[in-house]
Length: 141
Image (cartoon, rainbow, N blue to C red; front, side):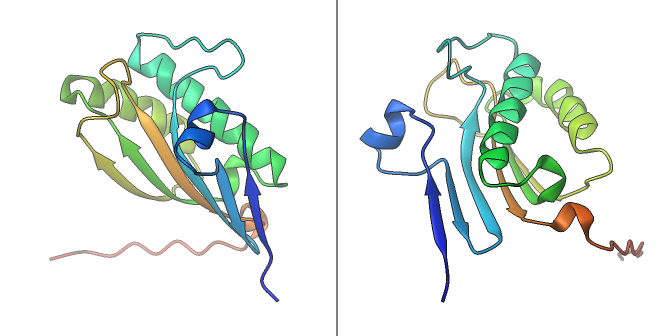
């Protein structure tokens, strides 16, 4: 039988908009689009890299709640509304995911409010951090 676990972080938006921070389906972990707001202080930096840093802290905290970690991430989606912020944000994202190397999508499109400079969504597989990994390099074209 499939086990589904839904994790709430206490965000008012989770209640208002009817969603979960994390939904686990057995060992698959789906983390909702996560903003760079410190959920304890409710503060959010105006700096896009600081927001990205907070996004990762929020994601890592959520993953820890279901016995997972950033190294289990297999897919990432990065949303950056302002193209001029993309280079700095993606340099930081690259540092945080170095050695993990998940599949990635980056989109520059509007977010829910103008003060959001980045949001990150990930999919993880519990235990992927300890799996044997084979890297294959191909030539496209």
